[in-house]
Amino acid sequence: MINFPENYFDTETRCRFTIGKLMKSNWAAQLEVLEVLKEVCAKHNITFFAGFGTLIGAVRHKGFIPWDDDIDVTMKRPDYMRFLKVVRQELPPEYRILSIYYEEEWNGSYSRITNGGVISTQPEHLARYHGCPFIVGIDIFPIDYFPKTSQEQTLQCTLLDAVKHNICLCDELLEIEDPKGDMFAIRQQELLQGLELQYEYLGIPVDAEKSILNIRNQLFRIYDNICMMYRAEECSEMVSFQANLAGLAGRWKKEWFSRAIPMGYEVTWIPVPADYHNVLCSTFGDYRNPVYRGCHDYPYYKPQLKLLQQQAAWGLEDGLEAGVYQELPEWERVKEEGEKAPVPQEWQRLMRDDTGKTKKTVLYATSLMGLLQGEDAYLQKIKSTLEIFHGQQDVVLWWIPCQTEDCLYKKQNPALFENFDKICREYREAGWGIYDDSGDYARAVVHSDAMYGDYGEICEMYCKSGKPVMIQDSVLCGNAQ
Image 1 (cartoon, helix red, strand yellow):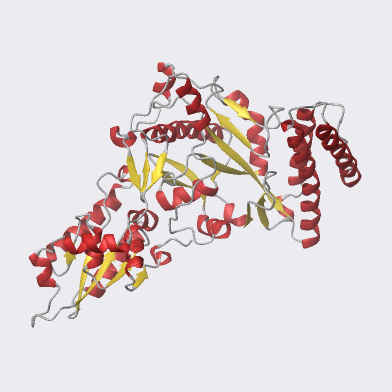
Image 2 (image 1 turned 30 degrees about the horizontal axis):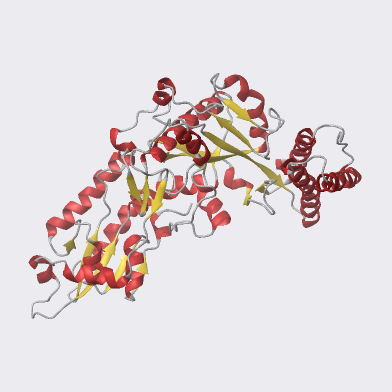
């Protein structure tokens, strides 16, 4: 089991998103499943990578995106198929592997491993999964090789679309309550026609005499075979085909996935593509600035929680079933709070020159995310910025460093935080600029003239003020590979 710090499960706010204790337990339970996945893959020399939102979380937050609730990983198709062959006998007895190759009713072109099949409030289960009673798991997405020519790409996607159409018809049939009604008969006829057309395209028969569930499973297997039409040596790109999406979930150069490197993730680690920056830019564009977007069906365990609450088997210790986003206050409120907050005499002295003339005050905001992403290169960036402002006669720097006291990543890279603390200490002792670790951002925003630094809460407040803002270029901090 993972050894979590005692305060890990406390209600916590990250990027203005308050994460409840129950979500923290869910995170911890998922990390336990991740450890099992790592063990199986290490034993069989199978490579996997943090994928999609989990990859953003690993790179940008060194853990979960605050408003995310699950873990997604990717595997190259050859590793994925090998994984499916060995995983069943390698998982703990209570675990399940959900895949079209093991579960007829599984509805997806990806697989999932879970820590069981039932909700449990048994003491042993709660102890093993850090107070989480839910069925938790990790989604595993295969990534496939994509042909070089546009003609081959169009052909493959057309074949996949034909199969997806029939899968959708199966889904509609399964949702119709009356199997003897007219709507069922109409959709069933459409499915039979779709299967005939699909056979003309592919020459692969589907046993239409089987149940709708079985037909859908046959179709998913055909879909999977089309996904793996091409081999690595024939292609220069990789893609994520997902049957529930209209287009590609991702398209990348195959060399970006040439190897995996470990990256800190909460209190453990997760493998990421060595060229994670290009993978993320290709998938999401500018991924480096956190922008809150509600996640799909957040939290995923809401139906499980509802069932427990109906049975009076579970309560919410802090009142939060998952998490809640805290909107920034309006500028007028920020301004009012900032103007009321006193500015220390020593700071006022620094904000004036020898003649008493007011200097320009530049607010320098550094973030924990920037430190975790850039590491040593980020420290060099801070040093360079301090050197530029040191000695300026008509400008004073007002530095708000990031808060690091409770950062879980400290244990994984203690030298980074020691060196950061050293820079802070030397700047504070030198006394030529303002060092503000008070947490009163409104005061700093109101009493400064411009802001330079990382995107984040301070930057958002500053944008509301209408005063100049310059975002620190994180690529210069070693983000690009």
